[in-house]
Image 1: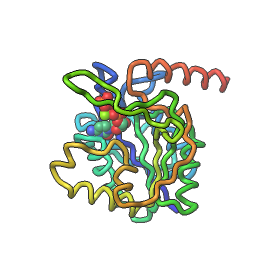
Image 2: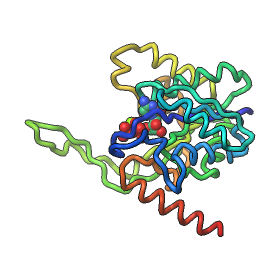
Image 3: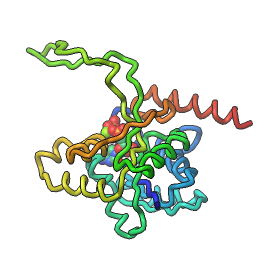
Image 4: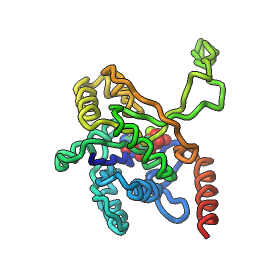
Length: 243
Ligand code: CTP
Ligand code: MG
């Protein structure tokens, strides 16, 4: 089994506030993307990493990643207007890698993903699942709301026990993921206006079973400013533990 990892990193990070594109914002002195690619490179099974970078930063990202020394081959392409489009553009690069049969998709915005989680997703795909996502129990009570006359009202309280917050890396049989992206790309303008926020959502539309493995709280996504505080603290704790 040959495993490739696709890393969508082309987002602006609007919820993080003004500054560089999110994947290039730093924690512990290094861009989020570098942390994420390092984790993938440290996973023994990952042989190819394809990064979808912000279009204006393709060269800068290539230079940044060229300095990393590992066995995995690294390719950088320009991303697109949505996460879904960025993943699709990165998947196209795999045409040059016909030997790849398992594809992981991992957000650059999840820089501190443990290698053990990456390997557990790969193991689940290897043992026969065509799609695998890591899931975490939900801490908050989740309610569906509706807005009536500009007032937010609770429509329904969901049963928290049956909910999971889904992380990355998500792992797929290559052919299943490529077919799901191709079909989504063919849906046209209406669908493009509401792109999927993860890859499993595209695969679900085909009725494939999506297996859920245990996620890891350290695979959290850097979305808002407070997440950078958490990421810095976690990194400092890891570095202290390594001393
Ligand atoms: N992403 C991407 N291309 C896009 C949009 C997002 O490759 N056009 C990537 C981001 O770089 C990130 C991942 O998808 O690694 C998850 O998306 P999200 O957390 O929403 O990041 P942003 O879109 O950058 O953030 P925001 O939604 O706050 O602008
Ligand atoms: Mg986004």
